Image (cartoon, rainbow, N blue to C red):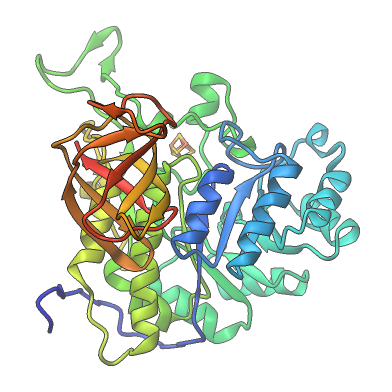
Length: 418
Ligand code: SF4
């Protein structure tokens, strides 16, 4: 084992269905996130349109932005999917055929749908769109997968509650693409089938309105009296986040076709870091399954973007009491996005970056790029585009020039430790 390798803990020893290289599918909350996700290695991204998606408060895409996103992704050979996975009330269905046709015209490769009415409308009115069954359908057995295959769906997104053994079992029965969540937030209810948000805020989880009420802080009361001891922290009902970076071989060998990362609301830094780590792990395993070693820098990279405790969800065992977050543990990720590289001049070694959060000379920063390129350096002199010297880069989106210790490239990220 190399110095940088860490010991993974494979626990799955059942059926093996190793396939061609799986797809890495990343979330993209807006056009800029889409570009970073694709640039850092996603084979496909999923986005929300203005209607019918479950993230109604994400920065959802207009048709024009979708077209631009599809064009950008195509340059990397990547695809764009649109989430249309609400459970529709009658009124929600007005105009759905037209909406789906417009997605098709924008070059969207697939929709992710849960409601049979939306599935059928897409098949009838937008036949070039693939229809992928959403995780909202809670599919966990091969007979259910067979049902959806017979309905003409080429892909099923399994429920987060499906075990590794069940995935292998389904794959050995069915020639259907299986998409599985491998990273990101979990629902403490059965994926999305929850009415906490509806009760507390009149925002419907199953129509895109979830306000994450499971992660709020609660006091416990019996009648009118608080039963919490003095000084005791309020509790939450949220669960730990899923992270499968240590178990890539198990997922590939079980027959997962698409590795899905959760988080359309997450930051650019989060999406780029997480995609970067999984991209490298998948490529390394596919290139040499027998000699594969999990590298500590992939695990570290995930840790630099994470802000909640992580676990392996339902893959190996049913999560127990330890897998919930009782005390609010959420803290900012240890690194913050400081700037994005827009240009690099090789002859002078000067990079032009666009500011995303303040930084100043003397500060230690890290540059990262696709493929795990990374180095740490101390920020030297700063200048604006006109060459005026700056004591601090304080203006959002301002273009700033600085010397970098090593070559960098457009869309590399400069981050700072918090
Ligand atoms: S409130 Fe929490 S458990 Fe309920 S749907 Fe939202 S994320 Fe899931």
